[in-house]
Image (tube, rainbow, N blue to C red; front, side):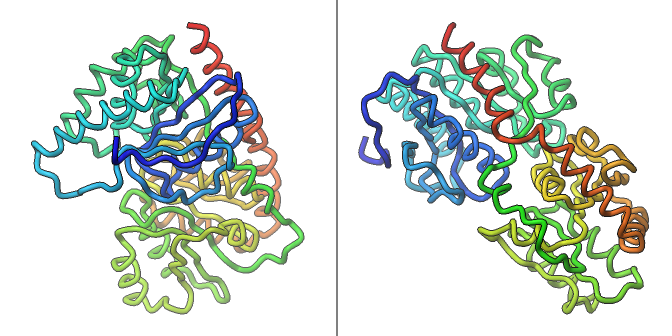
Amino acid sequence: MSNLHSEGQFSVTNKPKIAFIITSLTSGGAERVLSTLSNSFVADYQVTIITLYNVMPFYELDSRIKRISCKESYNKNMRFIDSLTNNIYMIGSLYRILKKEQISVAIGFMTTTNIYTIIASKLARIPCLISERTHPDYDPLSDFWIKIRKKTYPYCTKLIVQTAGIKSYFTKFLNPDKLAIIKNPLADSLIAFRDESLKKENIILSVGRLDPVKNQRLLIEAFSEMEIDNWKIQIVGEGELRSELQALINDLNLEDSVELIGSVDCVHDYYNKARIFAFTSNFEGFPNALIEAMAFGLPCISTNCPSGPNEVIDDGENGFLIPVGDKNMLKLKLEVLISQPELGERFGASAKASTAKFETKHISEQWKHLITEALQR
């Protein structure tokens, strides 16, 4: 079709053909996971990434990965009838790509794309794995998509989730045999830049999009009430709340001690130099940035939000867990880590050791097992 866009090509090979399907390849956590897995699979599979819309990848991709997009751009202001037409178009487009590329297993990421993937895969008569990237109880999904998800998900080959809490939700309407828990991988390309020889600075780091869900406001307000000198906050990420958060920083006279860094290609530089990591989310699918910070040996304070933090932080052993939205407790735990650097060092060493199981080589093997099962169907 004229508006299908593809890049890359494969040499003739007998490797199975798999396709990852996602809305786009922007700078989000799901996009990082998909990119990491795709790069790790090129030795064993012919990998294609199908995006609904043509956006330049934020994360580096192996040159052997083929990219195809269904449409050039997304219109946010579509009327209902236009949206319905777009949904039908996407399913048809995906079906044609799966057939043309002779894909053996399709792998969907995120709810709407998962639904497209299930229907297109059924039409193409191939197995499909789908992956939820957030906790459904806290996902701002419309009733329409929630109902469609409930109707279509039983037809997937396997649904991969990241936490026991998310799995529990889907057992309400999905055969437990169709569910698998696989944590998110730590990107090798990120961990390669871990450098413990670098001098630390008095920085409290936060990484995540500037969004109400991430609740960076909590960190800024807690910090404003602390009586400490020579410490600052750096918030890495971009999003809709930038102007609101900057206004808060200005109102609290914190312009010299709180920085909104924006999106960066070199997040490892910030992990390497910070002394403390603060994770203030109201909810998560899986706390990617928290895992990354722990892997860099940072002592972490995290809200005990659904879902994920309490599956990686053992409170008081390799970090601190605090109630969601509890500014006073966040302030207290920050003061503890600042005043007791030896505790921070112990937390950091324990945190780093506890994240070894999230290395790409371990996580990709779990995915490969499910792909092999799907190929044998």
